[in-house]
Image 1 (cartoon, rainbow, N blue to C red):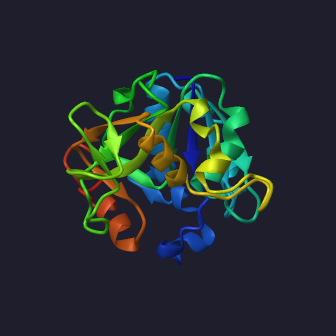
Image 2: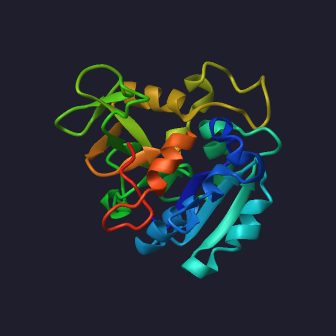
Image 3: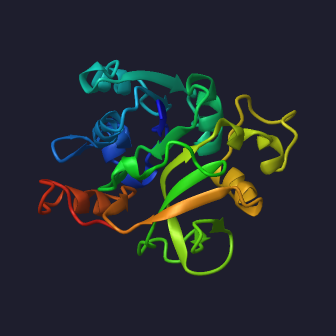
Length: 242
């Protein structure tokens, strides 16, 4: 796994006014920007190239993170314009920078104690996702995980997609059909959510996953941001958010 993509282009509306002047992934958590936790973990498992997609307050990312050399990484920035392309459009836009091998993709606004080494170098299918217990704000989850590690759109028990996974480039093949279009209309680059492609690939039986039982949070609100900033044994400044 030489390459990784971090989704960091969102506006962070629910965290306003904190995000009026600072992109959500750059907000401080445990004495460093939230995104820095990701960069450290990626470097620790041997990732060399990281692409960060940007839109809102895009200039702050290179100003804060530089070229990645402090982590032993090469960081490149995929600017999406004034309007973010959503996760699917963002992955498609960044694909030319992500090499030919499977790559990690993760949301810049999550925090987890997961060891990124738990992701396989080669997913069995087109994608392999880290799933977590359903948080209070998302009680019905996203997908079901069976005993063989396959994900399904229906069934029990349902878990929540954490925002961390590894993908093959072929995952994006046929993206036009997956989002219900031909690719001839709409914005260029296109805007669409990753879930559209995930549901199509899950229906085809090509997405696997694993259940992470540790700490994870989607840092989407001031309350959840405060929770991960609270002290926790073993990780100063990080709390037990769900």
